[in-house]
Length: 384
Image 1 (cartoon, helix red, strand yellow):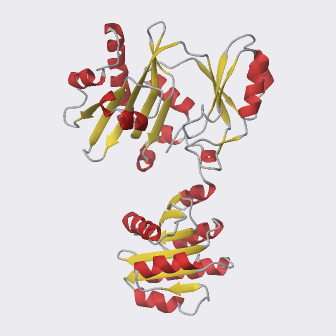
Image 2 (image 1 turned 45 degrees about the vertical axis):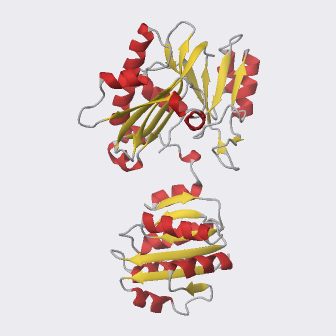
Image 3 (image 1 turned 90 degrees about the vertical axis):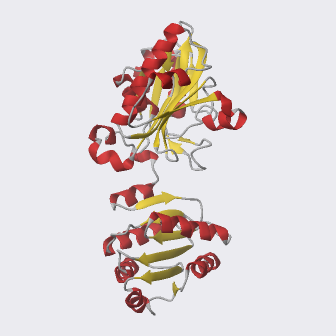
C-alpha cells in the first residue's frame, strides 16, 4: 500500500525525524481563505499523488505572494497529473502540501528496503540525493552505501559507519544522521514497511538535517495488524478495477495490453503473461483468483475483465486445491449476467477438469476450449 508524501512525513515526525513546516490542503477547502493567511510569504505547493516525478511534470510550484499561492493551488487541485510513473492517464490531485522553501546546503539519499535475495533489511545512503537511486546505481554504483541488517543482531555501530561514508557531514551532523537512521529503521519494522525513502534528506544552510521528501510503501499482507496505517489508504489513487478486485479479495494489477487473464496462483499467472508476451501478445492484467477460490470469486473476476474493455480473455486454471468444475460454474454464472461479446479461451487441467469441460461445452459460441498453455496463449492473441 502506498501513502502520500504528507502522510509519510507525519509518520516520520512521530519517530522524531525532522521535516519542514507544512500545511495540508484538501480539495473542497476554501483556497482564498487559506492563501490570505500567508501574504507576502514564499511557499512551495506540492501535488499529492502516489507517484514520483511531480516536479518535472509541473506538479510542484513556488508561490511568492498570497495571490500567486491561490493561483497555483487552483491550477493544481483537481487536475490529472501525468508523470513518468503514472502512465498516460495520470493521477488525480485531491490534496496539496504547502511548505516553506528549504535552504539547502547538501542533499542526501537515505532509504530502507527488504532485500529478498539476502533475506534481510538493507539500508542505503548516497551523497547524491534528489535523483532516482536507479540513476545513481547506473552511473556510479560506488556512490551507494549499503548496510545489510541481520535479524539476529539488529542495527549496529558498524552499519552507521558504512552509511555515513562520503556524505560530507561534520561530527554533529553525523550524530544527528545516526539518530535518524535508528529511528527510520525502527519505524520501518514497526509499520511493516517494504520500502521507506527519504530523498532528499537535506542539510540546511544552518547545518540541520531535514527530510524534504518521503516515500513509504507498506506490506498489504500486514494491514490486518496495522489498523492506524491502513486508514491512510487513498482509494482515489488506485485503478477503479483494482479497487473492486480488492473488495472481492482478488489479486489484480492493471497492465496496458488487451488480453485479460484469469489464473489461479501467482506463479502460473506470471507464466501465462510471459507466454502471451513470448508469442507477441500483450496481457491486460495480472489476476490471481487464488488456490481456494469459489464460484462467486470467479464470477467477480470475469465481470472485472469484461468491464476492463479487453479484446479477449484467457482463463488458465490448474485444478489442484481448486476444482475446475467450480471455475466452470463461475464462468457460466458470469455469462448469465453479462452479454458476452469477446472471445474467451479456456484451459482447464487437473481436478474435475473433464466435468468442467462438459459443463462449458456448447454453452456459448465465443467460448474456446484448448488443451495446453501454448495453444491457449496463441489462440487468445489471434482472437484479440
